Image (cartoon, rainbow, N blue to C red; front, side):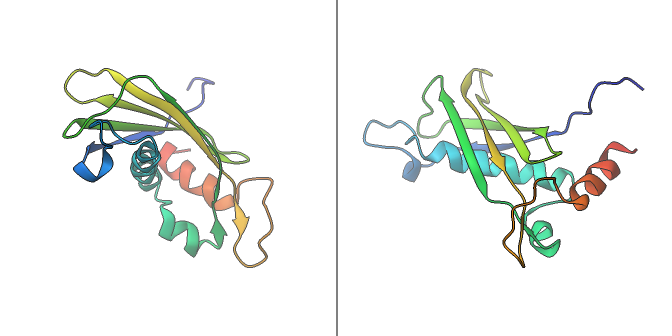
Length: 143
């Protein structure tokens, strides 16, 4: 087994809906975060720690940072693949994203979000990810 960290990724397909575009027929910039959320949900399900599991484990995971880089516009009716990859998990969940055109594979947007664990009962920030995160990932990675 190599010393390289394991990679966990997932993807989801979305179609740019009419209500997601502006008067220029281009996807409104705020909707890319919604698409990131769809990819993030697929990634969290990949290691059995979706938002219901988070809540049941006693932790809240607010997003404290989001970064987007727009490369090309998405337009009405375009089918997109939202790719999400877990970049960090020890002290926070840093998830990287790439949105690509399904037909051409051209990159449209890239970015990342950072979530931190907060104890639901005490509202205290956790400086290390809770053990449940490590347990869930170990099950997926087979350690």
